[in-house]
Length: 317
Image (cartoon, rainbow, N blue to C red):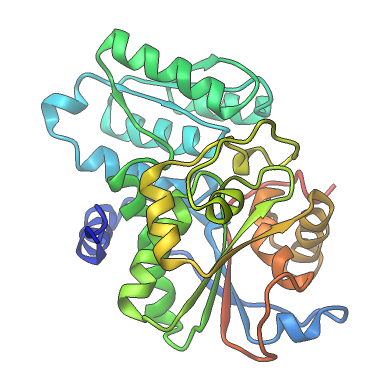
């Protein structure tokens, strides 16, 4: 079996590279939930909603941009995003003084498009879903000679996201279960490979929306599958297809991918807000929803950590 293209030393190098560029986000002990006390006991929340640009995506984007050779970076950047990755690339490109274009699907909230433009990036609308924007962005990058910063199919991006695991296990080394929301798979593949290298017995469980079971279905099929359609309001968790890089890491390191409904994510987001004052977008409440609605088997009091991976209010109102 070939070694994965991203390993622990790559994540550790990413942590050194992005130190001072991104925030070391806090862990918060979750308040017991009356309805879900057994799942919530011993739960820590990793608050990546407090990260630069409002999500974990800043880690991967910063690592990618800072690792580019100067002559390559000078050509400029382009990416496709449901919103959060675009914000991160626009921010990283702006800090480096690089021309940056971000392709967004039509359903991305106008507020995110405005914030991306506020970082100085060119915003281009293309198609209805991330996959449509991705195709248009790749064509633009090839035409203009720019560097394409993939949201998840990039070793540097994966390594950057993996720095979250280093922080969690440094602060809470007894953690036995990590629960992570899954979109394309860049976040969970980075966290899983780093966590498993540091603590081989740790359990990793991913969470996808019922309306976008991309890696869930791929794992069960034993190969990458492309969804015929996406039916979820959690747009940052909704690519129709992952990538071989992420699929292979997830297949080797992640115990399971479980599914939650949009309503379960909304209820989890409201719980985060009402009990903790944490404003999480719908997608960012997915990991908490899986625990609150007992989609993951765990013993009461098991040291667990769930990622709150993005800021927002779409799950609260």
